[in-house]
Length: 446
Ligand code: PLZ
Image (tube, rainbow, N blue to C red; front, side):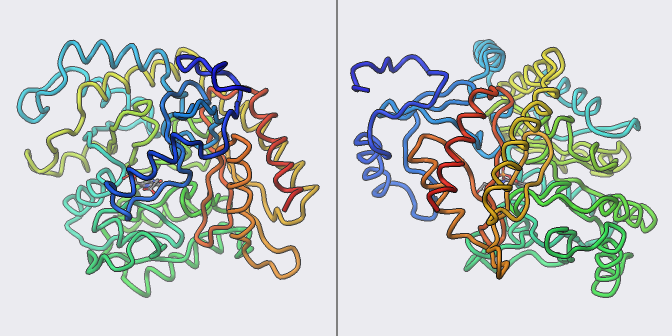
């Protein structure tokens, strides 16, 4: 297709390749970027995006990509969702910033009410709004420490919680996240997790192992909180064995440890429930929320039991941009879309189509050791069929080959051997079938 046929103002419904990938305009931008942007910031695919809608993103050369990553699970209800755009535009013309801790506004309060209504548990809940996932994790830990008067923070193997000093200490993977950036925050204890494909343990046995580890290495009475991702994100969409996390929560409750669910990647309708905790039978004391909450605008939150949230002194929580009015207006629109348009069912539809397709690929390609995940949070882990060695090389090759065909898939996993799929809920079954056919060809070409 010639360049001239591409109307740059229209986002097509299908992938469309009009240049090599990356195209000439993206390559020129990459040159400028190399001179101006820190090498410490990387990009998985150096195509520069100009426009996006639904599940499609269009680059500066006019190539349209089918986006199975949604900016790592941020544009969960779709790129430039009409309701989000309208709400943010309207708010921009009313008030953009006052600072909630100086002169407050209703939108912040409304988001806190919506979070209280849609996080698990029927007890009284309160929230603080911040800017990023890492900042939500920082605040969750801070709030738990204040409430308990204890210092210790327990996390799990393969966890990812952010790039700030405390959250670097909470991550499992040193490269690239923390190598050379120490010294790190102390009092963080990393316990073995449940990873059914590799440990073969039941939920009860894996929980007993985690608990024994923490009791030996820290002691329950020194722990302020246990922070877990109900489904681990960067770690490779690891779904724990049945009963694992509920057993940990029970132990936390019995020992006065605040149980914190980091739902930054798994939350906000991605799994077909507002929060993945619901699928796993968890009612966390605190929930950490970010990514999908505001349709692409930066907003994050800590929501949880009122008595824990209220243990902080006035002025102890906050920040200049936390709960920005435009981001809050967008978040209110996101909640409204999920509720009024039944978007939770869309995640279930996507699971139906995509998981079935991935299982069919697994039947054809023995390198796919496991298909796992819930809703629109699915992954395949690649292992060598005979040695069971992780095949990061194959994952990288497939992600690169899919991109060349106009399909964006993300990688994950401590060993880089997981392909993860977290498309927006706006993706159609036709688009999913197209993506699956591209993936099939990529596996066949391995
Ligand atoms: N907790 C569970 O998934 C962000 C990281 C992308 P921020 N994950 C994507 C990258 O390479 O930086 C994440 C997460 C979980 C916390 C975070 C941190 O959220 O908004 O990136 O700070």
